[in-house]
Length: 237
Image (cartoon, rainbow, N blue to C red; front, side, top):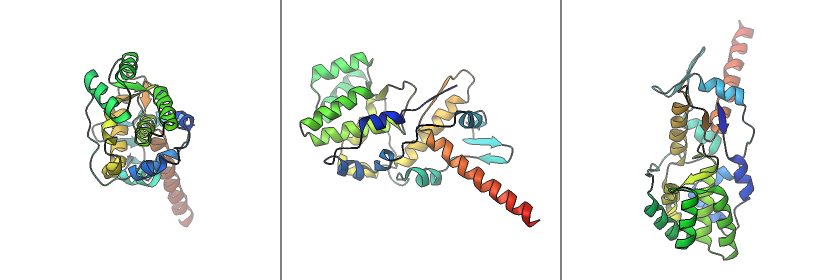
């Protein structure tokens, strides 16, 4: 199984422009700009994936059942875990066209060309980076913020198997920039990861996408805590 992650793409986009930074901070997603761990332990992750049970959303291990909790998400990513759920639905071609023109300020011809190249309902991460730079040059800060945030979630908590695209329906979450923080981003990140692990538990699945530090780091910490306790009990006895 191949691990698919896009952390390097966040680095390629660079730090958010100073004029956009307030939008990013107010969205509650700014911690994702700083957690850029690029080298997941493939053996460790795949070992856990083999023990994932989608019926209970837990890993069945020799020491018992374990899982990734909301506390782990909050501790590692510092994303909000209280608030509204990020509920969106995949968009058809015409709906994607309209939302991109409205929220990204892109003309119809440019939008149509991108959707045609991306086969509808999604846009390339590289296209978003170019749009971000173009809007910065023209000081269209709200459009810049939406392009940056869409690229950010498409490269981290909502990363998919394509390694190239992000779905346009996530753009709806950034329609009203001042109120983006009302979403429980941490819950959405955990639900998305559970879905990817559920798919990966089937034998015919060849890729595991997602924000892999969220899968790796909590278990390292849990095992360190477990073995520290185990050795402490052994020494005391």
